[in-house]
Length: 162
Image (cartoon, rainbow, N blue to C red):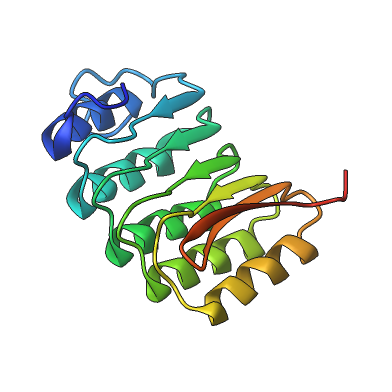
């Protein structure tokens, strides 16, 4: 579904499919991966996705790169990441996330040791946040990959631990 101009309205319909707002009482969708990169999704759509993800027990990967998600949307997703039992990989590269949103995401990764990949490259945050990201990578043995912004270049850091 990447690069299809889904926008926030389309995300609402997707949220119904993932298990929120369903009028027919159907169980949540059994999708394991959703790619919504470059779809003009804002914090409004991110809010809808966060509600859907709270109810979805199967989704393991979500790609929201290249949208218009700011700190508000990142904080909503961080709240979900703290509690999710299924979501393992989150791609939020090239959005509009700054220190406040990145800080919330780092806190979520520190609390939920099941997250194995977090991509934040192409966002703009301080060296202090980059330090927290590096520390989270060192301390979370399951976090295998963390992409972050460093001096205008996205850098992927791999955890040497298995």
